[in-house]
Length: 206
Image 1 (cartoon, helix red, strand yellow):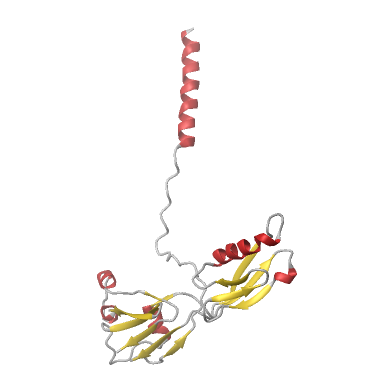
Image 2 (cartoon, rainbow, N blue to C red; image 1 turned 120 degrees about the vertical axis):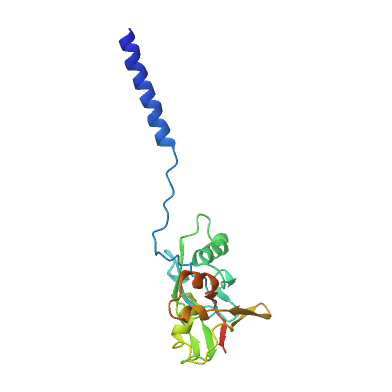
């Protein structure tokens, strides 16, 4: 009897232990070193979009986002697209089509065929000032590189980014001079303001 009880107890304890392990939450994996997180792309005025409603050839469209940030889509009308993620625009179109179907609306797919609306300008003491369409988000250092880099007289601690916010313009100071010195360290990176350039920004390098 004692032997049988002992074996039964071991089986029960083993089952409880297995259940506890199965229910324990898995540890969160840290991102791999050196991997840079890319922000998802948001639609801008001037972007070219491809829109498909599966099984509905009449609703397949290539559209360009208007300067006011909107698009026109059949059976839906005007939709504000600027600032949305593609999946958010998919949902907006799906909601607009809901009244046209008795059952479920066919799957809507939106893709950015040409992100030509993501533009910014760099002027002042750079080697190749102008307007740039990178097709992806870039930070101020990448923007300077696209403009050929600063010239020898540039003041990299007094850069200003002019950013449109509604009907007003905000001036954002940028300091990156420490990063251009010999032997720049991680502390220099922390003290600098390597911010992301937004669509419509004007970067002035004095």
